[in-house]
Length: 632
Image (cartoon, rainbow, N blue to C red; front, side):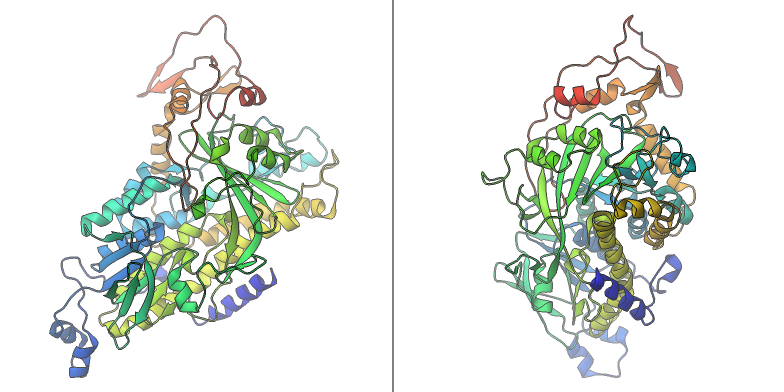
């Protein structure tokens, strides 16, 4: 923690020399080259022949051409960079490790700042992303009491004013489950931005690839990743060493090859995936102190359409659930365990399940949540064993004392600023990197100016990424090391000093810290305010899922037949969390439950289905959990 605080302090000092680019007005005034008339660049030889010739004449004398950019890695950051630069008129090629694109992967969160950046990159890309988007930021998101939530998935305390009602101190019946609510919608409205949500990674990657192919059909080279590079100097660019032993040349090399980056390994003199004996250090990254289990399921909860994501807090751990669309719920369980505490395969590393790993993995995770709310156990009970994966979380100290760039080579995304997943900003910051790097390179008219442009990119990004790395790590450290079950005058579940501190933090978190945090995250919005568009997009999304929204019947909330059928017919597909793939077992439907029919509204007209003489109540969460695995 001390090193992170010192890094943040140093970042603020650096800020005096590297003004942070915020909002659309903070960007440099650049003249973007049109695709029909790309910027031309001259080589070092032409420059040496006549130093008195202008940049434009040098480019023409060298047989003018667009800037040639090579990108290591075809993940979200690499693909976004490629699209952004292709639209700017650059000649871009991605060198990707995998042999071909395949549709696998879990959901990825896009916060309002990332959506604004996507819109600034390309209107068509933004519109396509919105067609596959699930909004979570318009619904209740926040921290719940992991011990006191009553197991009914109640929304009673989700309103921040209700949750902060002093009546809770004297009335044992006052809601106690919701601790604080995140002001995601309010902060997005402050800047006129679309609301936070999720999209399936395969849909996003397919969209990015499709948009890139329209501009350059052969923009990606699969099965041949970047192994190293050599700066040629004097405006001659960089020689790129590929895995098959061949070399390519480019004016710029962008390292977007993830946390175990081969480009960064050469730049900073690291051994690729080199690990210390105690596993606390790996290729220059430090173990955060936390391991995370992740899983995905399909299940009914009473608050499914009223909540986006929930963070259940308790002693030394926390449990997160999030709606990821189409009836699916993804969950994460964070524990303070030593590195290498192997219980499950890591999809991020491409490993498979072995006999040495936990047989009853879900049971193991449930045992670590003994005494916690039934809401957590209900989610775990309905999770297929084969969907659970584990990863030890590593991040890096911000690179405040050395640049992200080396000559004509630079780093972006997880390759240089990996961060804890708590704020969902890892992919968002990679997208911001792509946009800012392209804007900087648009102002370059001579290859000799590339190294200075890349240094300028570093100075523009280092402060913001440092602050967000700090906030991401701080969230984990506070929840696990400083938070506990909040104190209550009505029970004995939280009685230590951390419980009193957690209770005292509540108003400060609700009205000061979280509003400031999310306002800062969203304060970078190169698209500018979108006016009424965010509300229109939210309304359109709600209309699209209208038939799946539950309606009250006799005081109960129940799923519509459309939603039940969609959940029963959920297609089988490989699923991935963040990086690599695993196979999810068949999710079988449980016993058939008859639900009361409900009124729905279609095309503006009310319609109803006949009610049977006898209407059955829905089964309890516990009964439903015993009867089926992940479906209604």
